[in-house]
Length: 131
Image (tube, rainbow, N blue to C red; front, top):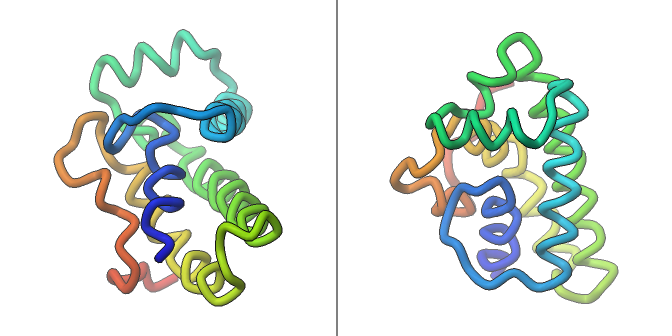
């Protein structure tokens, strides 16, 4: 299934189970952090301070929350496409994964660091957000 790939994507911002990170994970984490910093107009120190304080990305983003979600959805969908190209996902798995990207990223952005259950957001077939 797509579980491991999805959980790896969710783990990128410090939410979810920690595991050893290979170069690919590190590159994806750097890309996500760069997107967050760019959209929010903050630096890595401010982002880390907010995480340490237990703030969600949505709290930190404020009025820019939807722009942040849009940027992270685009980034995740790009990573899903790359996984298909690399043969790690089938086209059908990619369609399923992308169908849940908005709900998954929205939950991720609204989650507070260390929140129980956040690492399990990769479940396929969860409720979508009616937008």
